[in-house]
Image (cartoon, rainbow, N blue to C red):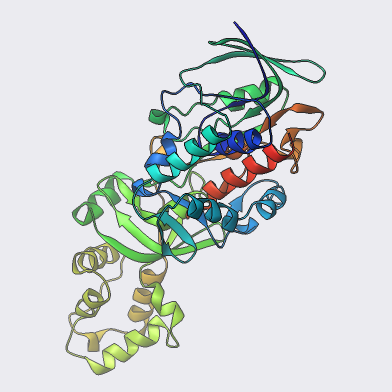
Length: 403
């Protein structure tokens, strides 16, 4: 069996479906292949089943890459408002959960259906459970050996994503293919992923499993102020997922348990001095239990005591040095995670194909125009909040329009 198409796209995820539909609308004959049994699986589970499909405040600064300028062109050419217009055309209800973060009001299935409908209208039907064994290039075409047989195409677009959540079918096939064509692939690691803890700290925080609170967390010059969730395995929630993309094994994290004081006129030290003056007979633990969930306040006092910060029974008996030490501990609590939960639960894969070798206009390999890479397989990774989907849409459309 031999087939011919203008374009073959490998990967029926967000980027692959968007690219297929856009190319199809331009009159190209498109074959969309995927080894999985269902298209857009990751779309379905994203955003807690609601799919945070874009962020209206998307800028290049929201992406990590060794080549930070690469994403600028595509993001300018296909904006969050462009995708939002498509969402509204399909009559999908959406909500803005945080400034700029748009989610489906009902279910991620709405975005999956949008992508499948667009592909169908453009004359593209995903060929699932299809494997690709070999890719060869000629001067101006590509020949694939697949489980469907031989396929000849004018161009090949690789939209295979990263290594995150292997249970949904993620593999390193795109990276392996890139290496076959002599491209550099930067080391990959899990991003937007929960942290695991060393046994002692894990045991200390165990009674707090399920508790959430707002924190500021810092690492390697980056700071995020968002909710943190304490789990039976470690630390999760938006704050931890965000900072995980900037953390390297062995790094310390610095946590501010009372981030709102940084926004106030009076410092935390001044607030504690005032508390000593106004409530001399009380204990600071009572005040802390008003600032934080009571269970958390109790555990923190125990943690601080193990670090040598022990306060007297009465506020009046606390020295200035003790109060300064307490304030510092609350705003600069440092610890070393044991690691992360890895690709099993990671939302994205950091690293990937070096974009210096890829055209930011067409997403073609420089010097090999018929081979293109889009989406997460490239060394472009968004922060949490809809940015990675916007990169999928933008890179897909930019690539398809240049075919």
